[in-house]
Image (cartoon, rainbow, N blue to C red; front, side, top):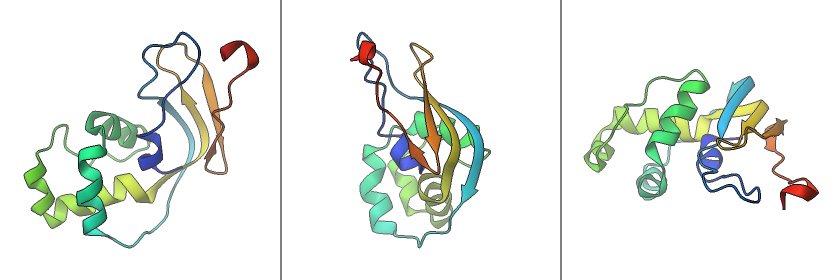
Length: 122
């Protein structure tokens, strides 16, 4: 699971008011090379919850993103490379996503998060 996906997921358990961002329990992280697409990154930047991306990337062992960032950084090739790597090349292969409110764990197996809810959570 890429961090772009993580940045868009939240816990939908009944009664949860703060289901974002999901915590990450990483058992296996892999890097998969992806071609850099600057236009894609520039279009995605405003849609990304930055603090959640920074926290998730650090949990997965990548600490190169700045805590805060201005849109003007999109003119920096060095920044774009780091943003690209965190967003698209880091993959959570095995582990879990954790609801920040309830602690409920959603397993991630072979890079696929299982976000299905139990009957009593709907």
